[in-house]
Length: 115
Ligand code: 5GP
Ligand code: ZN
Image (cartoon, rainbow, N blue to C red; front, side):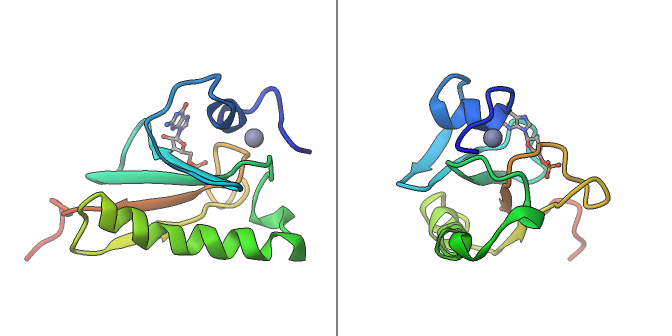
């Protein structure tokens, strides 16, 4: 499926729902999470509606490589210098709430961390 009319991330990709976009290319869009868990919290999504990592195939390999490698570039561009996490939740037991594949990229100082 190219786009799901009921999917919030498809609507963000299409510009039908506003988001603070930080990147757009042929196959990916990245934008700030609406409810950040970290000082800098970006979501990277494929433009095509892919439900989750449980649905990916060999055709998605190049896109997934670009998604993985976009994270350090965005963190650098956004001024994150101390490191970051890349997280993909898959399915109900994986804590996935939006059923359009996305990678969380979370950076910035962690105030709860000791030391
Ligand atoms: P999940 O639990 O599916 O891995 O994460 C979904 C993420 O999408 C959550 O962190 C949530 O805050 C974010 N999110 C949900 N709806 C919207 C939205 O309309 N706009 C933006 N920017 N983020 C959203
Ligand atoms: Zn979608």
